[in-house]
Every structure is written in structure tokens, then in C-alpha cells.
Amino acid sequence: MSAVVTVARTGLAPATAWGEPRDERRGDAHHAGPASTSAAPLLELRKVNSFYGPVQAHFDVDLQVRSGQIVSLLGGNASGKSTTMKVVLGLLRPRSGDVLFDGQSTLGLPTPQVIRRGIGSVPEARRLFPAMTVRENLLMGAYARNDSREVARDLERMLELFPRVAERIGFQAGTLSGGEQQMVAMARALMGRPRLLCMDEPTMGLSPLYVDKVLELIAQINRQGISVFMVEQNASLALQIAQHGYVLQTGRVVLSGPARQLLDDARIRDAYLGGDGAASTAS
Ligand SMILES: Nc1ncnc2c1ncn2[C@@H]1O[C@H](COP(=O)(O)OP(=O)(O)OP(=O)(O)O)[C@@H](O)[C@H]1O
Ligand SMILES: [Mg+2]
Image (cartoon, protein in one colour):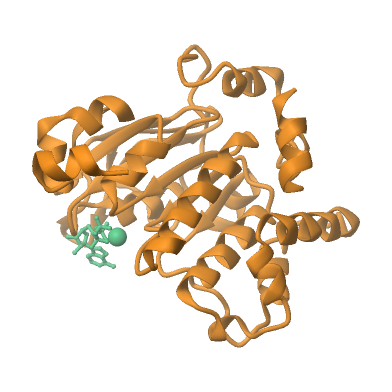
């Protein structure tokens, strides 16, 4: 199994050791790659309409993340990307429509229960506990678990996967650089053993070096079998690690498709990649 090879390299547990028990169908879907579309989606939004008071933020949003995929959610400012994350995490209940995780509706579930079902969150701006140490922040990610020996093992795995975090383990989280904090936020989410990792603008405000590093880590985490749903401002890079993408515009999905297809789409190039030149030189 390829995951075993990766474990040796990264120290990250194989996919089957993470999160709630996986059935064979989900594991196979991942190893069969993105071409495998027969399995039910891991995450699905069906005709979601969300509001903030009288203001409608989503209009009949349909969206799917299949097991094993990285799916990127693109869109301009105020298009409803973060609102989508809130809906997935149960922080905002849509007025109509449904949200399904692993085939079961999560509508009305409080966020801790949504997380317990296997969704990890790396929120916008990281939202670490700045006065707590890095170690304490990581352990907060496992607060719902009661398998302390496994938690300790996962902590060790995180420190192998994120050596930079290991170097800062005793520091107050608030003293870390943006890139380091992003890695702590990712590791903290992984400590909950999610099957789906939701990330809102994970590269926002990072130096180019850390942007590459974070995207590489996302791809690496995904190779362990953890599905990823990410909002990303850097459309070019996001689509290069994703299998599928959606574009939101004022609360509506206006474009979706395989990431490679979106990278070639003139509308995406013009809106997000700065036209032909930027698209062809993006790396
Ligand atoms: N707490 C809130 N109260 C009222 N309106 C809100 C709230 N949060 C977001 N909105 C509105 O909902 C719409 C979608 O906002 P959202 O934050 O989801 O956009 P976004 O795509 O994440 O934008 P950005 O790229 O700036 O992060 C916007 O019109 C925004 O003003
Ligand atoms: Mg946002």
C-alpha cells in the first residue's frame, strides 16, 4: 500500500489509522485517484441558501468533495467562500438546502459534533491560542479524543511532519511567524484525526517560501488519504494541487470542473491569474 511508503518518509500515520473507522469503499476511492467518481461524496452541499439576517450570502449552492480529493473554492472578495466553510462546520445554518458529510446530514449539529464526525478546520487567520504554547495548541486539537496514548503518538507524528513546529514546541504560539503559525494550525486540525480538512486561505499573508511549503504539505497530507476542501486566493497554485475547483461569485457557483480544465479556462485566467501571461508562467 503506497501509504506505508509515505509513512516511512513523513512519520504521518497511514490513512486507515486516522479518524473514524474507514470503510473499504472510501479507501479505494482515494487510491483509485480522482478518476474514480462512483463513490458517494464525502462532503456535499445541496441547494444551500445562507443568510446573514436579511442579506443572502449563498444562492442554491451545490458542491461536492469526493473522498481523497483536494477541492479548491475560488472567488473574489465577499463572494461567500468563508461563509461556505461556516456552513460546512455548522457555524452558520443555511435557511434551506442540505449539508451532508459521509452521506448524513449535518444540519443543526453543533460544531463540536460536526468536528467529531471527522471534519478538521484550519480557520482563516489561523486562530491559535496566542498565549498558549505550541504544544498546548496542538493538544487542543485532540480535545474530543480520550485515547491519550494515541494522542501522544499523533503529537510525535506531527512533529516529524512539521519539523519547524517541533523546534517551536515550547514557545507561546503568538510569538511565531505567520508561516509557523499556519503549520501549527494545520497540525492542530490533524490532531483531531479528520477525514476532511477544511482550510480558509491557508497561504494568506505568508512569504513565497511558506506559500510553497504550505501547499506542498497540503498535498502531502492529502496523499495520506485525508480529503481537503480549501478556500484559496492563489488560484493558480490552488488549482495545481487540486483535482477539482469551484468558483463562487456573489454567492453563486458560476463555474466548476476538473482543476486542470479550470486552469485553462479563459474566464479563470482573466479573473484570477492575471490573463494569459500569468497563467502560462505560473508554477
Ligand atoms: N458576520 C456577518 N454578518 C453579516 N454579513 C456577513 C458576515 N460575514 C460575511 N457577511 C457577508 O456575506 C458575504 C460573503 O462573505 P464571505 O466572508 O463568505 O466572503 P469571502 O468570499 O470569504 O470573502 P473574502 O475573500 O473577503 O474572504 C459578504 O457580502 C459579506 O459582507
Ligand atoms: Mg473569506
